[in-house]
Image 1 (cartoon, rainbow, N blue to C red):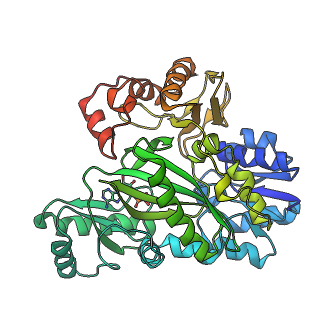
Image 2: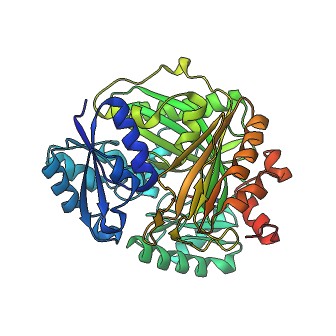
Length: 450
Ligand code: ADP
């Protein structure tokens, strides 16, 4: 096992990793920018190192500063959390060159899945169902038009280097295609420095369903069921739940086993999520995330398995926590991402938290790094915390969630709490009857007040 882990992240995920390290008896090193000197992850870690000024590129993305911090503190492994350097294959290789362990998958798998065109080809080769689309990147408008006509409109133009929903444009008809291609290429170039795009059939009312997997790097792989992340705004998840209200146990076992078999073949190491769109009983692979995800607590609550702790164990060469046959899905969990944003316009609302009361009671979990008096800096994401609620059934989970949302107080900044309080009382949500475009329509109707 590792002796000392440097956590190359901030906010709630840095705290989440720190908690797993403490339980395993591993010493922790927090790193922080000058804007995060008072952050909770810094206060709770055994040691901390300031790695630069507020902008992420000078601090949390600053590889030389992170290497220096490992050197100074004698850390032997680095946990990247999510975002920042978590899916940077080069970072994993640089750490290895310095005799440091990267707590994550093998660099080759990060690289393979980081390129969405390559990822799709790999998925197809491994027997995972994919969305109909171009076989690879499209270079000319003429080529794109020919492929689009073959697949049929509407068509989605996507960035090969995509992430966070950027570089994605819908072409409803052939007339829209040239503009969609140009806009997607420009956005992709600006966001990722790579203007490669590919085409996919645009699915009208799919759900977003993702399978959680855990591998030991030697061909042992288990799946831990699914999360339904269909409630999204601008392609970004805000509410995640498991199990999906749309799947039967048999469907879960079938898609889970397909994914686990594919990952077994890759000899995948660590946690990973294979993401699908799901429509009319069919699964379509869209991408794989080779890291711990924001919404991982949903799976932890319904399987009883600590994903971050097990991620650290397998990275150190340990065994999987259970056999597939021993994994039982227990009850239902929902996660709400409470952001410091206006609940109607979603404009970020950084600032000082004047009053903070997290809800408690049976089945309620808060993953957050804020406290009363904490100032949310303007430089990073606006997550205040994740509220995760568990119940024996989905109905019990919703009942508790309603109560917990009403109890929670975050004063001083605007938050998305009013949106969730409205959602949890909506018929379509209570019935589990929603798809990835549902929230945009709901918001356009204008029923939520800030
Ligand atoms: P990113 O890496 O930018 O997050 P993804 O490929 O994961 O991109 O897609 C993000 C979201 O965009 C999906 O959850 C879904 O809402 C939407 N999306 C992606 N592909 C399609 C598609 N073919 N049809 C309809 N919606 C899609």
